[in-house]
Length: 246
Length: 170
Figure (spheres, rainbow over the protein chains, first blue to last red):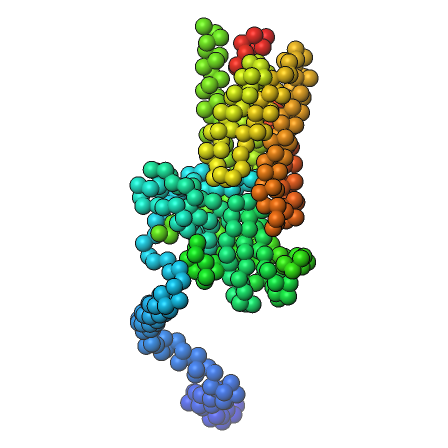
């Protein structure tokens, strides 16, 4: 009885060292099967503090911003020079006037805004007014402390616009509803729903290339004219603050 | 004294007409359109003071409202003058309920008249190039205005008549 017990203690599984080897072997087999993914994941957590972190990202973004700004200024100067050569209306500069809307009539026939800045602040008749989204209208009257803006939707408004995709000029007229009409004096103009409309580069009333709206629906051609309804990007019935372009 | 006070009150309310016209409370609107506010004042005034007074104050209201709107080519004066004359020919009705409905109908008619006259001006001014485009939005504007004016008139006009004419308070 005693002898048998002595033999059994000498088996390999009774040795701790063997189990350790087996454990390491199995671990390595697992690593091999998983193609090192465990290692890689471990490395991910281990190396995280040493990554090219936020700081480098900020530096790169900052230099990218600077690059874009310089490029924008160069293009602006270029654009200004070319416009002067062609004797076209200049793009707006940075000296805008911010104004609050103190009265708005955006329904029925009378479509106008009254702003809290007037001739005292340097607002002049004919100044363009933009809001978040794009062009709203034109200053039509000023008093000492207020200015009145005729909206693009007013029946009195007629604006030259540019449809960029098909490179064609058109006339945007207000009809007394929320969707002014775009008239293209060409029956074959390939205007489509979703086309983008901006102020015309050849316009003498407005600065060029201010976003205005998007074509919402196109009507059937009538008497060599094509008309389309425009959904304005700037919503005059919601906007409380606007910019007057001097 | 009472009469003097009532006259003063009507002038105070007259001053409020352009203010509310400019204020344009959107939450009272329908399809973005407002009731035609000047009629709510003009109807009680003309009914109490007669056609000539209605004509004169219609003209005054028209002048003020035209100066507030930027549409220099079109005017609200003809519509308001006509309404002033018409409203002056209507007698006050002693039956309260009938009176209330009458105010609604009369103001709706007045609003239709003013809206149509305004629309005709726009139509003639732009006859050549875009008259066909104007019809649908204009008719929608006129009808919404007529509906809203008729809807609010019984409430506002009856109160204003009670304020302007002390004898009608009984």
